[in-house]
Structures are given as C-alpha cells and as structure tokens.
Amino acid sequence: MFEGPLGTSIVDRAQRTGQVEIDLVQLRDFAPDDRGTVDEPPFGGGAGMVLQAGPLVDAVDSVIEKSSAAQKPHVVLMSAQGVPLTHRHAQELSEFDAITLVCGHYEGVDERFIELRVDEELSIGDFVMTGGEIPAMALTDAVVRLIPGVLGDDDSSKNESFAPSSDSLLEGPAYTRPATFSGLEVPKILLSGDHAKIKAWRRIQALRRTEERRPDLLNDWPASE
Image 1 (cartoon, helix red, strand yellow):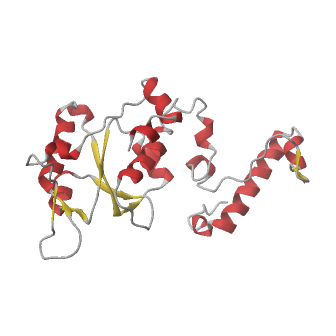
Image 2: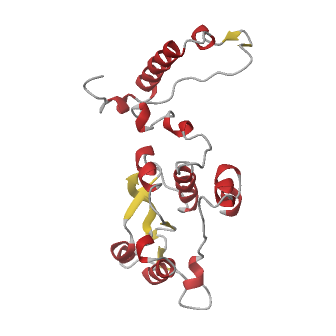
C-alpha cells in the first residue's frame, strides 16, 4: 500500500538522493502467535477490534533499537482523536532526525501503548478513515517536501499556503502561458515586470482569498498588519 505513493515524484527522488530514508515495518511480524493476530475485542464490550499493546510496543522498540541515542525517533500515532496536523507542525516535524509513524486501525489501539511509547497523536482532519495508512502517507509527503533541498528551490515551500513566511495565509491565484485562454486574460500586473507591484498584488490576493475561504486563519492576524 505504501510502495506506490512513496515510490513516486518528490518523495521518491528524496529517497534516491539520500535526503530521506523510509523503512516500512509490518506489525504482524510482531504478533504473539503464528496466525499474525494483532487485535482483540475491547474490554467492556462494544463493536470493532482493538490493536493490542504488545505487538505495537515490540514494533516500535524494534525501530528504537536500530537507532542511535541521539536519533531516537519521535513516535507519532495517526489517529482521528489526535491534534489536527498543520503546515507549521509539519515544518517542526521536518526538523526531527527520525520519526516513527504508527498507523491506527480498527476501533483504535490499546491506550497503554499510547501511554508507554507515543509522543503525540495527529489527525489529518475531522473525519474517520478505515486506518492510519493514508494519513501516514499524507503526513510523510507534507514533511519530506519541507526538508531543505528536497524541492530543489526552497522558496517553493516558503511562499505557499499556510507557510509562516506568508503569514500563514492562503496562496493567491497563479497563472501561466498562454496569456489569454477561453477568453480569460492574465491580470495585467503580472505581465508588467514591476516586481514590487506584483508582490503587493499577490499580497492583496492572498488576503482576499483567505478572507473568502478561510476567515478563521485571520483570527491570529498580527495586530500590526
């Protein structure tokens, strides 16, 4: 499931150039029986199955054992109950030497595993998926592209939506050739060559788009602006 998305485009190039290393760990390899059982019904009754603490702890420990003391991985559990992932937090995660992502599944994971090994729980939105695999891939993509040098031009990530250098605003509209398409023309300012005016125009467009689509982002807008 991971090999396709993580083996293409920017993430694949980052691996091939040695800027990032991604290892996949199969939880069933740490099952206590030959059947590969890693889940059990919840105590107290209820629907669904719960991932057992034992296999999860053993799987994470196998990663920790291969790491140096200085590079002990930051353990993240992908969970609908986690803190919402933001661009700013993805930037913070990109500065870690090593991260271990744990994919929740079924009805959840044994709380004791969270208490013993998990550093933080993250969610990619207020919705529930069948497992944490897709959220883990989304987080991986968001973090890897922020590692210096991965995008080739680091300015690409500095001036995009949510980036701190853009005051966490949404990025405004973008245009490319041809200058006229289906009767719609590129704003004249972008063809003027006046970089100061273009920068001011983009700033205004970013503010307008943020106000229209994500006014909540303006709640923390600097008082000086």
